[in-house]
Image 1 (cartoon, rainbow, N blue to C red):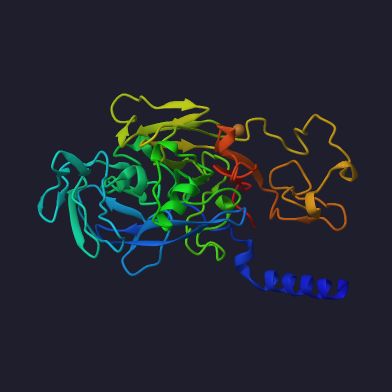
Image 2 (image 1 turned 135 degrees about the horizontal axis):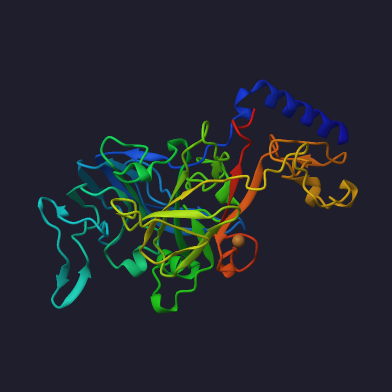
Length: 413
Ligand SMILES: [Cu+2]
């Protein structure tokens, strides 16, 4: 058995050595489905969570594609005429509503709330079962938008009918808004779409049973359709075939010459409670809210420790990581005695610690300890500070958490 393990280890080592991709950072960050015309359909399927549970859900997907949670990230440019055709495969009418977008048409007419007698049935025209509706609007204002079902939203949004729309300023794909003050590093652009899942509602829908939405009790807390630790897995991770988007924020230290522009995190909350989100390490700078720039004209952007992302809101936050204390082994050693390695506990003989507290330095670890650390990079928490949400079915740690990964200057080599 031991020999077998050793042989497997050698094989793995060879595989890693032979593959230049091993040194590359895991793929993360915003993955656009590019418009301005989109053919979407609805789908049903199962989302998987780290405790092994699966939950029946509905979603938007590119027509012909499989169920995916959340729906595709739709990217368009200011000035585009955006067309979204939605084919409905679900057993009830569904629609798409984009809060903040005005002048929406459905099948060529102004999109209006749908009434059945005195009862509101949909906030916007819906596609009947087996039917298609085509929405159109002019993308006039850059920013980050939610799109979600406007039909029985308390049920359908909870079921998973939601996604992100990004409107980029014309001519400036490296800016969140039109002004230079909103410039960011396009290689470090992230979405954090926050949502909640109450499996009881999903089981009721799957089994055609009634459910009282006023009794909603979320048990899973998601970023981009995944809960921790799946949030830190790469985009398109093989074991999450229907949850394609990771949420690892992967950056390098700010440097005036080699890395002058910040990362951009586009937060959205499609759930029904506020999520107090914060990164460890450095503060973020809020440069936009609900597709309204805080950096056009007078600078109204602000630094904060914690972004209270309310239901239905989007926040655009830039982020720099700076090594404020300038810890260097030779010139500025960390002035605390570090425990002997023999006194450190490594869970399951594995760790993300690189053997050294200094960025970009790796050192030896006790024999038999596996380090997942590639090049002395740092990991810090990035999470909802409502710690009941840091759980999967009320068992911690999990839920609405992810990590930021800080590579040494220049990246992993
Ligand atoms: Cu924290």
